[in-house]
Length: 463
Image (cartoon, rainbow, N blue to C red):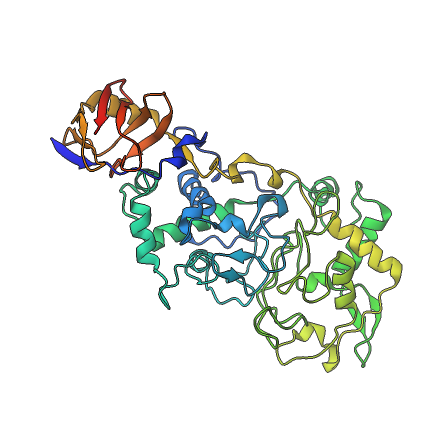
């Protein structure tokens, strides 16, 4: 027999109705439909998207317990309703605000660029995923100046009942490592895709991206032409023909940022006034909501730069305000600052086109939504695992609770099982897989009931 001490999550977490994950029927992340005209993909060979891995990534992405004070998650700054971005200029963390605007995550996979963050300091998405967790201001596990570190977080996760179960389901054993956290989070982020926009319908109808789209208005088609066509400049950097040339850095149909891009002429960040190292950008898809409204300001220092609408964005590129040593050469034709001199109508045409890049499903699809309800989670196990647990579980519970702890004996082959703990009033205090311990120290003296997944019920008395 194997004897385990069972430790519970805070009791309050189980009083509320919890979210549910059905491990026997995980959502489809690995085999989503991708249009045949989408060819760019930065997924590494050692981290292909799987249904299980992305499901774990979803839990990690939304779990506030990955922050030092259980108040912030990745989703606190990357919200589904805002194309996985934030309307705030600087997002609120556990110890202050972010140094730059939170980048939208839609279609992060569909790009040639493999580096992440505005300044590209992360070599891969995998590396990027745990850096906010280890940032003092954002999630607090920096390991510096008295902060706990990532090892402390992993120890914390080992005591959260659902993580040993989920890591075993994904990786075959319950070991939690930073690398495994990174792999799962990156799978979830890469799974977030948007290909149901008016633009996508148009390219399917037209058969290619170059000609007019039959579902576009004249203004939208003219805007598309301006976006795609390169400008012709005179010796002074003034456009004398051609289009706006947006395609040079944001090539469709993915509309990702070119890996060779340098600074776009927007300088400074919230903490560094002379910052010129911002060379990355998210996909231009879902720049605005389905009604054409912006999710707050644009670019890395949104709200500080005065660029708050699509028209503001176009005005910036129409006349680059100042030079800097890291300015992209494409914005310095002949060594001069770009002057497109777009007409009012041309600007309106570009705005109309950019609005066609917004989809619908990404904002509401449940597989990318928060799996927690009131910070609580319920897991429905795989059917095969349930049958094994029911067949083998034969627990002995010592009926008297001392020092707030409960001792349970399992058969040696069984390391944990699903159980529900309730009080005399029928209130559920805990419902889930237990691999560590139940702690009733915060509960008053009285009678409690433990019901196992095979129907066995045991009465406890806390003195």
